[in-house]
Image 1 (tube, rainbow, N blue to C red):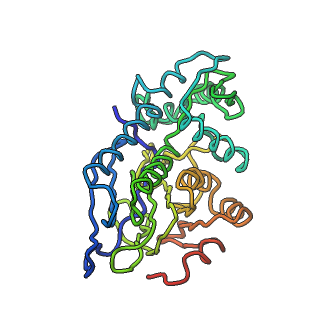
Image 2 (tube, rainbow, N blue to C red):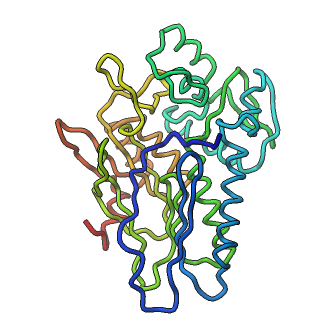
Image 3 (tube, one colour):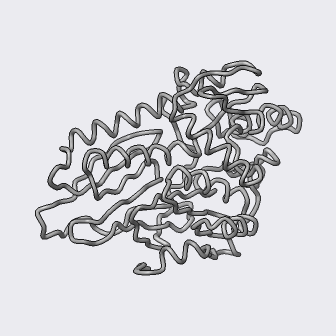
Amino acid sequence: MKLVVFQPVIAVAFAAALTGCLHSETVEEFGGPTMGSTYSVKYVTGEGVADGLTLKAETEAILAEVDQQMSTYRDDSVISAFNRAPAGSCMAVPAGMLEVVRLGLQLAEESGGAFDPTIEPLLNLWGFGPQARVERVPSADELAEARRRSGYRNLRIDGQQLCKDVDLQLDLNSMAAGYTVDKISARLAELAVANYLVEVTGELKAVGKKPDGQPWRIAIEAPLDDQRVAQRILQLDGYGISTSGDYRNYFEENGVRYSHTLDPHTGAPITHRLAAVTVADSSTLRADGLSTALMVLGPEQGLAYAEQAGIAAFFVTREGAGFVTRGTTAFEQQFAAGEEQ
């Protein structure tokens, strides 16, 4: 099976037409299925830019490479082999996977453990992971056992190897799409594409402008279960965008709603009022991880952490029957000028 990114809230949607150009350059597009969802690349043609077939082939080669390395839904992937390895073992892994793990461990430290790339046993237990049997509330004993098999401090990098001190299982689904977006972006630049918008399972990055000089525009969606409504429209150039939320992947038991976003400190789904958070960063990989960390921290702690760290983040919090939104100082400074509502 293909890698499925369990950051399923595609709360960043494309906005505004990409046509209407009077220049010789045009916007071309290709895309397809990936990671249990889809990907899309929009790019501006021009002198020296590789042809569309080449660009698509190079993009899909990257998608296949990431899938083979980081998919917990493939028995033959690198990460699955690592997860099967016993406690106390080390295993050589590709440089790209090490890059993702290294940032994951950094974010874990910076966020006080709100982000943790080793919670797959917990995800499986609650019904959200690749080995999940059914979505249900686990017993206290089951939860304690799964927590013993997780914890980022039991994972370390030794040269080109990953090592684990306990029988933990690594899960990079909260960063894999962001990493993929950055890798595709870098390859497009190498192929002389200067203006483009790349989206993989909802994580995206835009660089440059459209042929008519207009910026790429994206919309942050309102966190609604049954419809897609643009809440705020942003102009992007050089930024990656990632959104995490709890409103499209959850289950209910005895009238209680359980989010797919787990708090590593408790091993259980988050219970606060934060419905979604969007992060903008020059690194889509970092934005991807940060959006998960802030979602775990919640509206008060998450906002305080984001402000202190200078993170450009946009919070959507439940308030009665509606929502209250708030952007960090860095977010409002970055997107105030020329923003469309």
